[in-house]
Image 1 (cartoon, rainbow, N blue to C red):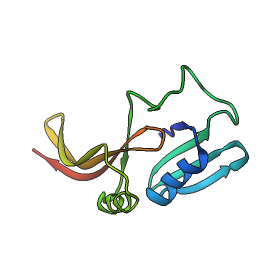
Image 2: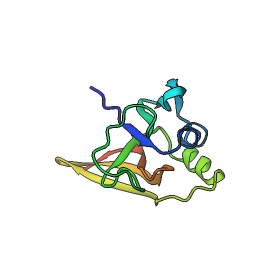
Image 3: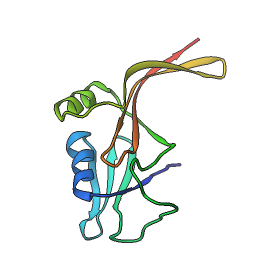
Amino acid sequence: MSLTPELSVRDFAVSLEFYTRVLGFTVRYERPEEGFAFLELGAATLMIDRIGLSRDWQTAALEYPLGRGINFQIMVAQVDPLLERLHRAGITLFAGVEEKWYRKDQHHVGNRQFLVQDPDGYLLRFAQDLGERS
């Protein structure tokens, strides 16, 4: 099973630049005339869609930050390359790097993770698997 969120964005070019050049996503396919792109980073996929160019699934006023109340966890092999790219781009993290262990039944699973907001305020949580412990 998979889940591919589609993020409504205010400026397609700015968002595409952020996701591809800063974060390292690749474009699987796009429809520039609609301000749409399907992106992937490892096994993670997402879509970006320019507000007002095609169909909008707008349930309320689209005010910054978009996506309030949700964060997208994106698993990566290593968080350090992303941290370096964000630093070079001058982007401030929403929450700094931490090692966090979560209880899962009778053991714990660990992540090395951080959070950053995209240009529209969507909260992205990049996490590196640290394995399990008792």
